[in-house]
Image 1 (cartoon, one colour):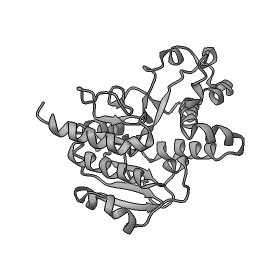
Image 2 (cartoon, helix red, strand yellow; image 1 turned 90 degrees about the horizontal axis):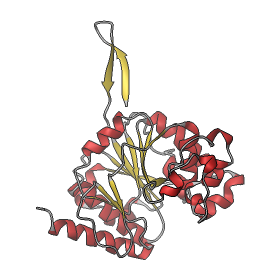
Image 3 (cartoon, one colour; image 1 turned 30 degrees about the vertical axis):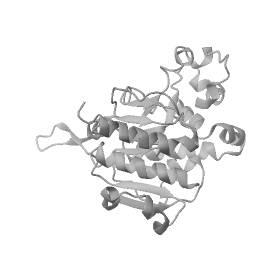
Length: 283
């Protein structure tokens, strides 16, 4: 984020603070930890990332150690989580992120396939919360103001359409269809402001049913729309969204997110894509 200061000449100057941190959360069955291992390997090998990495986990250091590639070990801090649900990714109660910029969350079913520093710097230079959107996949939901959207397929709640439409402050806004698998906070202020709102929305009693069926993503979209913190262009065209069976993309965008793959398929699909990248490393 750009910090404005008064320089020695008595003029306003821009001091760009760049101290990135990447974090992810992992809990539950071994297959998610298998994804974590491949995620970390790609982050170092193809993403070229050399900064700190925080893993919020429900397991001990001894249990997680076997899933951490040697190439990433020196960069990692393992933090015990207090909430084994989707809201964990929005708070950092046991790790101080105050002085980092940007602060970037990734689901661990993601593969990095390009040098990631330029994208990190764009997130750091932004003034808000950068997200990957699915508006090009569902243009019928993204082409109108919130109050005018007709959700004939009843899929809008994956991005919080009902809760957003229930708030008159959002009626004239654009429906972003933000995917919660990649969230780039420009600085701690953005992280703390939006993250705490999403955490509280997810854990609010009136929202229990929405959280149960659709996870955290509806509340992220609501918070981004309501606060105006959403930044939807910085990460545009940086991520392929992939499933269990389609061919791998020839174009490298920086990120390949296997969010549409069945859970049991994720590690094998991620490993296959790593093999694909190695095979075509000179292309």
